[in-house]
Image (cartoon, rainbow, N blue to C red):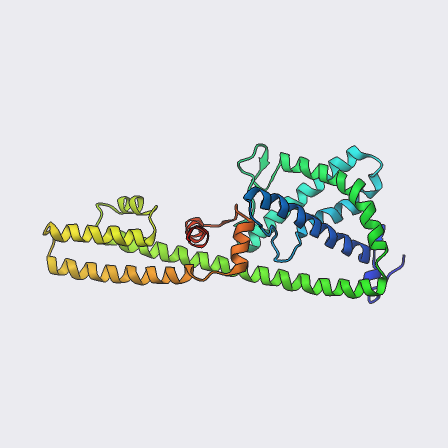
Length: 307
């Protein structure tokens, strides 16, 4: 089929298909992938979990993988073992680079196979790759013949209108998700900075023998627990009659005021609960932001564990 730039993009030939068919394959497999992931995770967690990077019912990584498998493995579909091997390799490469790109864009690891045997950089692992090979066989020999017939029956004119609407929705949904991922990263960075300021002030107060003792003791405590411990230590020092009492009390009053300001700032940030951000943290329990793990754990405790 001859196609020139400027013509209807839906008719653009792509190997042995066209953009119209490939687009609908992508959307259908993205939806099916979302259904599979959501059912598995929801069953495991015993509650509904919208398992996808986007808010809507689509997992683009499945659509991308299935489209690539259809395009590159169709010529060898008469050889199931080659389909299995090719699907395993293609899907693994896509999963690896998806993880790498998302980490570079958002400064966070979204899934992690580090605890599984035969993993590579925690991004991919042999067992999951084996599952990709099995899914490739199911896709090529079970789903694709049915989906091919369904897409062929979509009227071209109305299909193009629907496809355009779906593209717009996809871009809007993806933009909203990216916006909130960036906001979540900003929130975690602020919480990390507040905790660092908090710890630095406590360490500089000389209430502990060394800064290392203060950090070791306080690292596992929340801000409110640190306030209680600092107050107790101040009371003990005052009761022991150590230091110049007036200067010490003035210094400690300033310290407590600074800590309370930081605590209130943190409480304010923790209190800003966004539905998209909460959904993402539920959907990706292995989400690991670079350098903000303590802040993430405190955020999760505040959002999900408190009644």
